[in-house]
Image 1 (tube, rainbow, N blue to C red):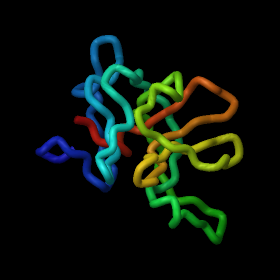
Image 2: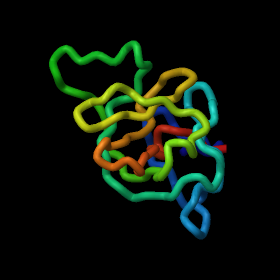
Image 3: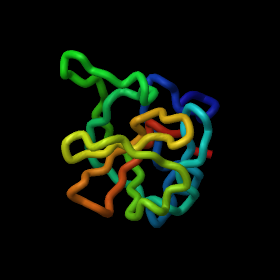
Length: 133
């Protein structure tokens, strides 16, 4: 985070201690970094320390890989949501194997998160891919 409390676009580490309540839930609203649309209300997600790979953030229409390789990051700090109806605003990509990536439903930037089709009740939103207010 920079001194103003904003996440830098380069994907610097986010300090979860300022965002997580004593019971492990998000204390602030989770917002899209690009358009500011609300993804989650406070108290709707549990902090999770799980290592997941997310492709680089791009607008939906520009995601294309001609050589089959995927640029991305392995991230560990996530908001875990147990019910897809707890989201205020989220979209899903088409299946990529057994994975659906979460994107902003308004501006279609993403992926901001990850969902495995084998586990119907686990939706992960990467702290580094969203803003908090």
